Length: 424
Ligand code: RNT
Ligand code: ZN
Image 1 (cartoon, rainbow, N blue to C red):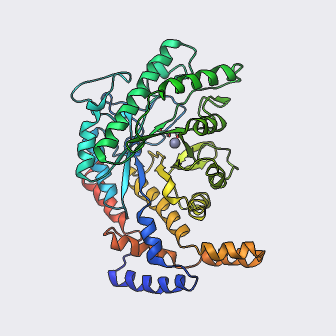
Image 2 (image 1 turned 60 degrees about the vertical axis):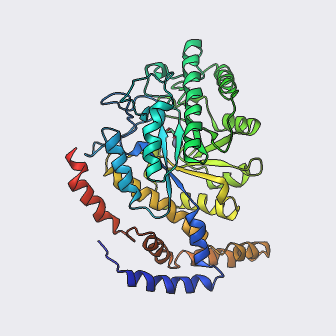
Image 3 (image 1 turned 135 degrees about the horizontal axis):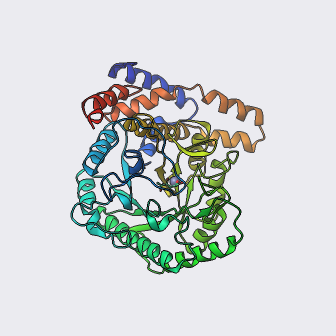
């Protein structure tokens, strides 16, 4: 693996700063802004979306599939926490952790989804507090017998709806508790898999039921300083190819009418849709949103994030629209075919790099060229920026954050695998 000394990283950085300064970009300011981008790490990459409700719990249904059987999966809360600590030690900046309700600590008392409460998340809050890390939260409406019909909050069966309404109500209370404990807003995200494999006839009926369930759930309000609600839309899932109740139009409408956050998962759209383009539209009507960064690949939505054009445009649009402080950023991918810690670190660093790249753009200059109709110069400048020494700035950012620059984290992960995760 490429090894860099501190001196080399610093020298490269000085040269890079000088070159960016010639475009009018103050690199130190960009790095300060990058510090403010806190990425919420999804807890579910560590154990393939299994959760800890009972021993050997695994992902079931929900239109999600995790493929691969790479060794080292976290089998319990302790292993998962240890893995997350390792991941955090290899990431510059500060992160949050995004929990799913199914990851509660049920060692004291087991509870079905309609009976969970803050007691199941106390040990999480304690652990996160020690790490000075904040938590976000998700209701879990899959991997459960009452989700097996393919419908939960939009089910035509009143008993099923009632069960899940109670679950989400409790998850909101847990989110409020986490927010109060950590002293900042816990984002509660709601995603449901409700939908149909084949041609539905009563789309309207299911969507009406979902709206009713949501109205009932959100009838209780919480202080936004403690918790905020987000709603995540989807286009289709495995087994729900023909119809997903919670579509983009459905939730965007609901979020705007009810002052909730829309959650945009960039794997939940048609493959040719440009998700970055949505941000400046959404922000005309709302002043906050949640992102799930992922990588869609053909029909699947959950590959490890890489620093590609799609993620970059999302970051650029956030920076160019000056809404960096209004976007909550989460990750959402699960790959069981490679080292899971490696997946986290590679994916998170890729997302951070996209934000850094966007923060190093001379936005004013580019906007000026555009407004003066100097299209060729704008295009050429955008192209030239691609070969600026952005990697030198990234490495320096890692250095000042005391984490390995460049690919020097790879050896660390291999060591952890050898000593710890491979023995599971
Ligand atoms: C599924 C959604 C959702 C889940 C997690 C586990 O398509 O993206 O966010 O991945 O809740
Ligand atoms: Zn998602």
